[in-house]
Length: 488
Ligand SMILES: [Zn+2]
Image (cartoon, rainbow, N blue to C red; front, side, top):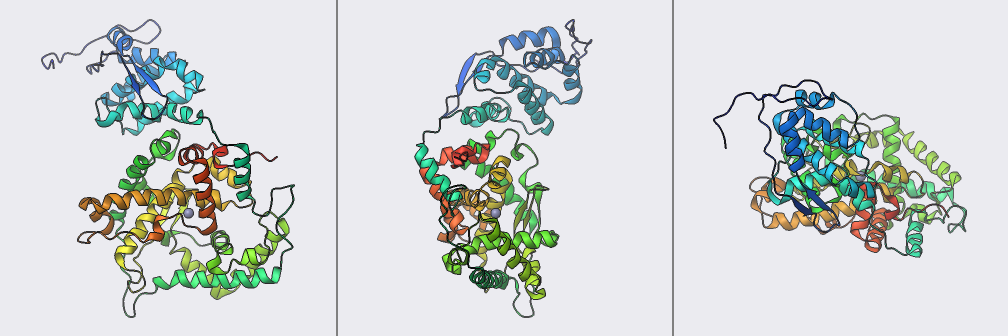
């Protein structure tokens, strides 16, 4: 409003801070005191910048930030000035509001057990990252961002009671121990090692050939390369779309990867995956578990009485994998397929995507575009899975329910919403299917949780416990909501 006065203003420093000189105009904070309620939650946020305005006018930005940080329990007399020196005006305007809100609602946050030091750390990380929603943004974007990024939503969701009968949780927990709970009566008879060997060999050889077939180009031709700039655009769209469809759960994980680099910055070609002994074994174990319980592949694990929680059975299985990989032709095919298999690498946070389109005689292009989109969603779900879920997978007999099953439940849900929207949104249809391709729906199988029995089990748990509860478990690491119970 007042453009005329551009003189530098000098503020008196509060006694406890160093002398400050600020030349940027101070942000004009909204003076109406109001309560903002986040939809479908019990969160009510008091927004009151009156005291902060007084602080700003008296002590300048540095002094004001210092005071707010002190109120959050952070003792560093130089912090206010350091922040002013480091961050741009917009970032400081956002931060002073965010801190005010967390200071003014401290009591509610304390009841939820929110750690103030963690709040401050998260807010500073947001300012550092520089992708900020300013007040007045559409659909309460600013207010929602403050609630999500500081950890308020996370604490509130994790405080939601889990109203599921203990007997139901116990029954569902049994899905993670298909051979019987540890220390209880075991449900699977003695392993038939010969049957397991022949069955797994047949199933794995078959799945290997099936999955390699599309990667042989038509005679005399080359496979069409995937344009990774196009994938990057789809990836960033999907990041936003996933957060919208599954709101508020993924963004509630305040320390999670959604507050780090965008999805598009973490894409690479599966050709770049280094194939070594560990990756070969990883493929065997992942695919083996997948086909071992699948009737389409003769369920060799079930047929041979394989018990995933019996160390002796696991040893036999490991030996079968080692022997198969000892055959150069088999190992060569696995190596080739690994470079044609999308994956999320938790070590570096990268998502490896397929570098080519398959032979068009094997897979029509528009169907493959849906497949690529589905893969981008699936790998993104791995990216935003809470680490405690992966940790919990190490303590059950059937870890793939946690690692892949729930990923598939959420992937299928997001793809259903995406397909519905793309059917009526030409711009989105072009993004997903490519320019000039009329809308074609994805195959029905893509709209259901895949990964065989592991996807089925995760879907069963979701249906019984409820999607909201499972989402708290999955994205925020409260694993009891995934029917992970303490050993009885
Ligand atoms: Zn996966």
